[in-house]
Image 1 (spheres, rainbow, N blue to C red):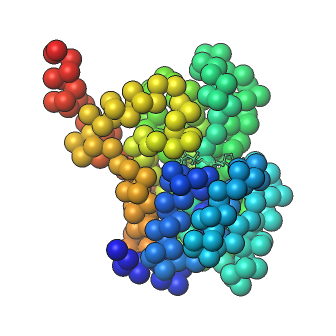
Image 2 (tube, protein in one colour):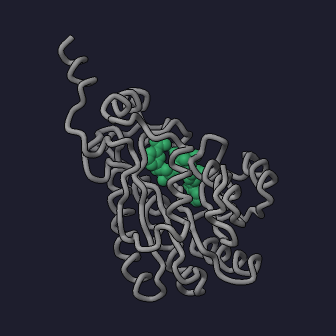
Image 3 (cartoon, protein in one colour):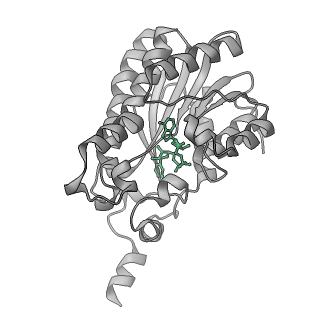
Length: 270
Ligand SMILES: NC(=O)c1ccc[n+]([C@@H]2O[C@H](COP(=O)([O-])OP(=O)(O)OC[C@H]3O[C@@H](n4cnc5c(N)ncnc54)[C@H](O)[C@@H]3O)[C@@H](O)[C@H]2O)c1
């Protein structure tokens, strides 16, 4: 169902890799709600070809951008403004990558070259995107920037590895840049801390199925799906949430504030 919540709004969506991606579902929902969108992803991800299906479905141009490259990010911002003939109203940062996770290196044995790369792509990139947006005055007054996070930023989930550190910094960047962009242009910046979700990035984490089942049993409402997350992001891009900024917003069916659930106790007593 559409409520026209984003009618007349324009935005950039990072991170739609395939149909399972949170960014993919969000792009579809933003389109349904009346937004015009530019899609972007790393050139290597785009070569897999899936993103063109989405681009066609929602009539969106695709501009390649490796978020670890200053030039790519600046080019994306400039080209987006050319395409729209002005600034955008929202940006979704839906990007995560850890080479340490991918290579199966444990947290205590991380390779720092890998750590640097993962940090650059997963955390610093949010700063880079907003810095170039600010430089080119590319976000309209009361615009909204959302990045996706995970509760491993606050609590230990051992196999989430260096992504836990990356998410902690990501949330800090959202707070600190949120202050700067707020006083300058009333732009709001938030992170959404999402339930574990079966996507390419999610499934790369060791023991992911166990994570998902545990979180499901620990959350009074169950795990939030990628579709639920897309709906929440739409509200954060809409004018209905315009005074929310610098927050880490848990979107997890209650997981973050549950000490223990009956479902887990029952299982422990067996
Ligand atoms: N899946 C989960 O369980 C879960 C839970 C909480 C938060 N998140 C976060 O949600 C976000 C989206 O992930 P997802 O689960 O939809 O998985 P996904 O694999 O579909 O998306 C990750 C995206 O990051 C992109 N990316 C990687 N390196 C890049 C680079 N150098 N430049 C530009 N883009 C790059 C990938 O191409 C991909 O599109 C991530 O920040 C992830 O950490 C996921």
